[in-house]
Image (cartoon, rainbow, N blue to C red):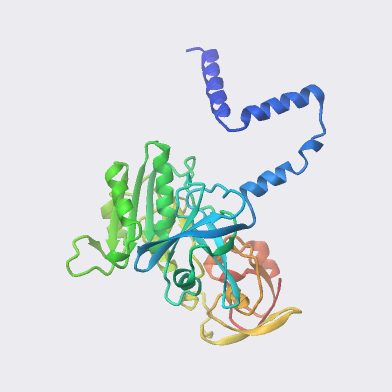
Length: 397
């Protein structure tokens, strides 16, 4: 085949792709019109901002339309929009849900568990957390018709076919199955050749979320493999038990070469899985981690100052605005919210940096989850959602 024929074939392919994009032909027509008659584009003033706001709104007003019992510890809360259509999202992303509980305004990020092709509602799947301030409220006190504010969809924990390949393994723990099932449905809908192996760990057999649906998908699609692992099984249980150790992963996966791993679950689950994957020789670039909140026991970190008791209290002074007592082992953002100080936030896991505050005096402990930039460290900024005051501090925000 001649070079000319190859060029023509590539041009036709490119044109077919472009013409399939919604709005492409309209944009070409507008461009041709401008070239013919000239324009200073004043007629488009504000349209870009309007389009961005539609696709990436800062706030959504949501209403609970349905509550679905999933397991004894878990419910899925279905939200619909009370205003503009819900913006699209990448399977695996989350929204930050704002709540007011007994006068305390706070928020928590929840992965969207409904399919990304579903545009009429968002499902948030909430699992009860021991002493969980927000999860217990959502499970015990929320009713159909109740309204909430949230951010738009955000986050980088999603499948990218250009970089992540087609041999995927998802290590899910507990409610970490929420982004997993959304990503799975999205990939299945593409109809491309790939392998998706979900290793789903949970404590109890009656607490496996979406398990009937997952088993049905595994039966229906040959490219999807489901492995269930229960750490606290009943005496007559015949499936895999224990934790997602390197030996278990090696056994069920049959090798790690060429695989990309997604990890999502409670923080201890995530930390354990990362250690096991690194023990197997998986490179960092082949591991995608969804952070899931601040460390529950920061004092167990090797970098924690030995002389500091996580249960002690210190003074937090908000420059020019007041002061309050805070427990050392509680994230600074949580204690700020409990005392009436509102700080913009989204991920609550140290990644988005929206909750940054400047430490004027005193010291805080920044765990590895903080992902501080060099400039933050140089000028005293911390991510308050994962910062722990280890002595009296003064902050500015």
